[in-house]
Length: 107
Image (cartoon, rainbow, N blue to C red; front, side, top):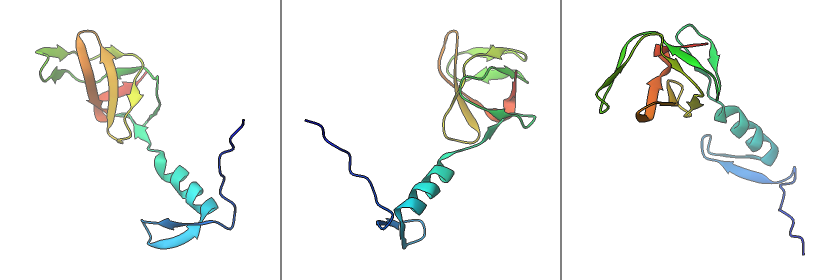
């Protein structure tokens, strides 16, 4: 037995909480796709994406780890968090490292 997902027709309307109006379903999907993308840029303006490699541009003291990451340290495989200024990454010995995009440069 195959169950089909219900789809929205062009004449369906949904309530947009941001504007307080009823808009067509096609417009709602277009608006949500446009607002979900966040551009994250490094210190020199390069656009960052998931999986990029970045280099630190200044020495950073990591709170709670008792460690300092030196300038020029390579961070591999970053992940975007949805915030325009924060990136999530892994580094040896530090779990849950979140860096500000203003302190890195794309490699």
